[in-house]
Amino acid sequence: MTAGGAPTAGAPTDRGRRRRAAVLDAAAELFRDRGFHATSIDEVGTAAGISGPGLYRHFASKDALLMAVLDRIWLRLKPALEDAAVRDPEEALRLLLAAHLDLAFDQPAALVLLVRELRHLPEEYRRRARHNHRRYLDAWADALQGVAPALDRETARSVVLAVHGLIDSEALHRQVLPRGRSREAQRVLLERLAAAVLTEAVGRPVHPA
Image (spheres, rainbow, N blue to C red):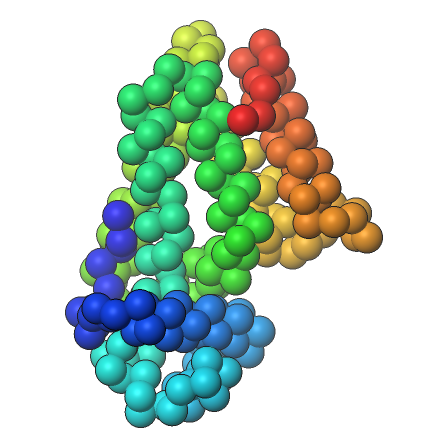
């Protein structure tokens, strides 16, 4: 479910996969903190413990590196989408909520970049990213309408976007939850808030996974 970045060299060994993941983690943080255009390949390499030129063994360009960072969003969500498609609507909704929370807490920098930097990438990539996003929204809306058939499609999508906005705003701005709580306590609170929005929409309790 990647959005379709430029071809890159594979990472056939465990060491290569770990190195590639370290590069993606470093790139996500630097692109978020400094901006994509203000960050050099050499800076990413230094942060990841690899030479700038060595990065090109994994990524053909800085654009390809950013696309790989963003692709991790879709790769992370793909299993939940596939699982939700074969579950009953209530279970599907719980799975999707848990997956979105996991993404927001585990890869917040990627979500920031999706909002802020996608417009700088090639049109073909942006088109595929929009397609993936529609698929994701549709999976949520399908589950929500399955739980509450009286909801029309537009309302269901609006509710989904409200839930995503609540969760994503924490990843983007860290302004939703009170500070000083543990990561797990913050996640539980945000999960309860999102479930409350869904409960209000469907008129019956929606319990987190």
